[in-house]
Length: 114
Image 1 (cartoon, rainbow, N blue to C red):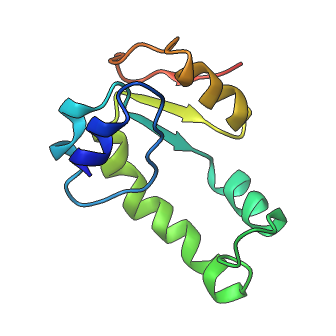
Image 2: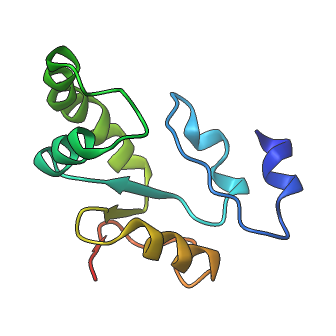
């Protein structure tokens, strides 16, 4: 992962996902942002999407609230910026980062809105 980051210093590189040790890479990144959505917005988005089958079954949908409850708080503690992707369009968010218009470190919270 470090090599990938270093090789993409001249153009934007977006990395998505979570891991148990994300802090190991934070010093190599320009921006550390949690893209989030409230539970209802996330369930609606999962139901509408056509490019990923996860969340279509009732069993998977039942797991999502628990995953939000258990996974989101530790991520929120380590991310200096959280953006609600239901309020702000994802394309606009990514465009802002590619222009480096968002500071590398911002005090927590803000939740950025349009």
